[in-house]
Image 1 (cartoon, rainbow, N blue to C red):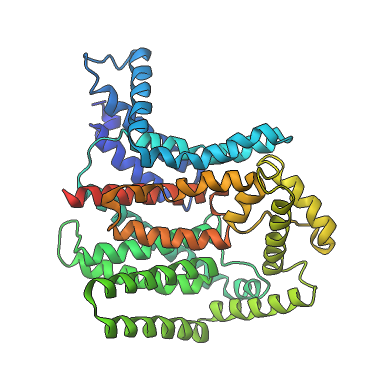
Image 2 (image 1 turned 135 degrees about the vertical axis):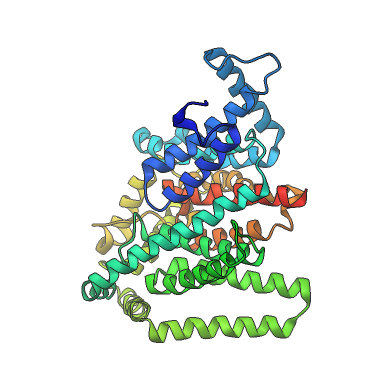
Amino acid sequence: MNSQWYKFIKTPGDLMFWSACLLLGSMPTSPFLLSVGMWGLAAAALWNIAGNLPDKPRFSSLLTWIRALAVSFRNLYRQKSLLLISLLLLAPALSLLWSDDWGYWLRVTRVRLPFLVLPLTFASLPELSARRYKMALYIMVWFMVLLCIGVGINLMMHYDEILTGLGRGQPVPVPRQHVRFSLILATAIITGGWLWKDRFTVRYQWERGLLGSAVIFLFLFIHVLSVRGGLAVLYAALLFTVIWYVVRTRRWVMGLSAVVLMAASLWIAIENVPSLRTRVAYMRYDWLQYKSDSGASYSDSERWVSLKTGWKIWQQQPVLGVGAGDLQQEVKRITTEMFPGYAATPLLPHNQWVHILASTGILGLLLSLPGFFALFIQRNNRSNFLLLVFYTMAFLTFLIECTIENAIGVAWFLFFPLWFSGVATKEKR
C-alpha cells in the first residue's frame, strides 16, 4: 500500500476520504466512478478491519478478507440504526416470492443493493477527523460550482434553443439526470451555507468570503435551471432552517423577515429569470391540458396519471402489492385500461411512497418507514442540523419523485445522511 500508485492513500482513512470525494464528484456525472467510489469505501472498511484483527493479518491471504467481511457483518448487527437502513433493500427483495418477472425484479433489487453495502461499510469505516469530513463536503461544493459554470456556458451558447425546449417541457441540459442533479445542487447549497457558518477554511480566512460567494452563485443558478423538484426541496430546507433558528433563538421577527425574503426571492426569480418564467408558464399550460383531458404528451399530466395508476394498483393488492418485478407490467396494463391516451409512454408512480405501496403493499411500507427514519434512533443525530434538514428535503422529494429507484437517487439518499451523521459524531467529541 506504500507504492507510488498509492502515495495519497497510506491508511484506510485516506482511502475512505478520497473514495468519498470521488463518490461526491461522480454522483452528478459518472455512474461508473460512482460505483468505484462506493466500492472504495467498502475496501476502506475491510482494510480497517483486517488491520485490526487479533493476530497479524496477511493481506495476501483470502482468509484474512473473509474474516474481515464476517467482522463487518457483526459490526452492522451491533449498530441497529445502520441495520434498519437495509430494510429498504429487504422490501423489494422479498417480493421475488410474488413477482413473475424475475428479470425486472433483479434490476430493481440491484439498484437497491447499496442499502446493504453502504450501511455495512459505514459500520466498519476507520476513524476520520471532523476536518476531513468537512473537507469532502467543501470539495463537493466547489465541484458543483465548476459543473454549474459548464452548464451555464452551454446554456448561453444554445440559449434560444434551450429556452424553446423549456417551453415544451424539456429541461436545461445538465450532466446525467436533471431532477437528481438539482437535488445534489440543493444539498450543496445547504451544505455550503453550513460550512460558511461553521467558518470552515482550508488555510486562509479569506476563503470564507469565496465560499459565501459560491453559495450565492449556486443559489442563483438553481433558479436558472428551473427544476421544480430541486427548487421545492431547497425552499423546504430554507424554511426548516428558519424554523430551526427561531426555535433556538426565539427571534421571531428575524424569522418572519427571513420567510418574507424567501418568498420575495422566489417571486423576483419567477418574474425576472427567463428560464424559470418559461417553466412556470409551461406548468400552468400543462395543468390546463390535464384538466381538459388533453395532456398525453405533457410531462406534468403524465405524472398525475402515474399517481392515479399507482394508487389503483395498490388498491387491487393492498397487503403485498403486485411485486417489484411486476410493477412495470401492471403500470402498462392499468394505464392502458384507465388512461388509454397515456398508454404510449406510461410512467411508474412519481411518488416514492405510492411506488412502494404499489410494488410491495402495506408490508413494503411498514418495512421501508423504519429504514427511512433509521438514523434518528441515534441520540447524537436528534440535534444534527445537517441530517434533519436533509431528511426534510428527502421526505419532500419522496412525495414528488420515485427518488430511490435509480443509482443517483440511492447514492444521494444514502451517502449524505451517513456522512452528516459522521460529522455530528465528531463534532460531539
